[in-house]
Image (cartoon, rainbow, N blue to C red; front, side, top):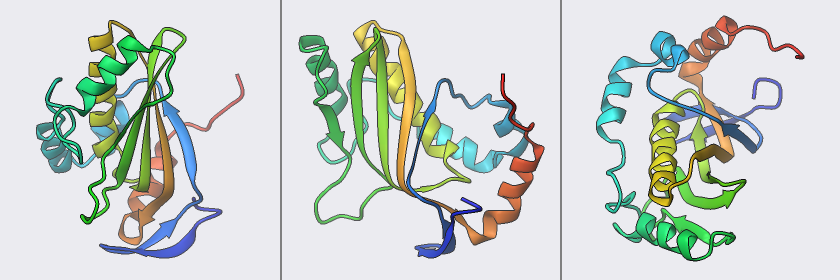
Length: 179
């Protein structure tokens, strides 16, 4: 993002937009050491209170409470399918940051992909941890271990006001090295 970013505007104000990205998260929780040190405790407490309800209540979204139940039933009936997608958009309403979720069984694990229209990378943990919890719940309903959470973000960005904080987090991380 630092090297390839471009100036842009988002509803809260100016941002640096990066190119589209896809990455996987193998495991994620509110107890992550980076979050403990650098996460916004007030925002984390609010996000924890908003975590998705357990099945069958679903994620809410455009099609109501049955979306995740439908995913589970489809994957039980056709475990090879690539059609277990749900939309989180509602025609005529404001477009959410997360627009769709995809579920697949691969390698005897449940793999979930979240498609983001836009993703504030400095606050992504507030969305990704509850999304990971959705994948864990769906996997449990299917009697499978959860696989990675895949994230695709069309417009990842950092708000201009968060640049120093993001740089501080990145500077505190160990240098990657070849194993």
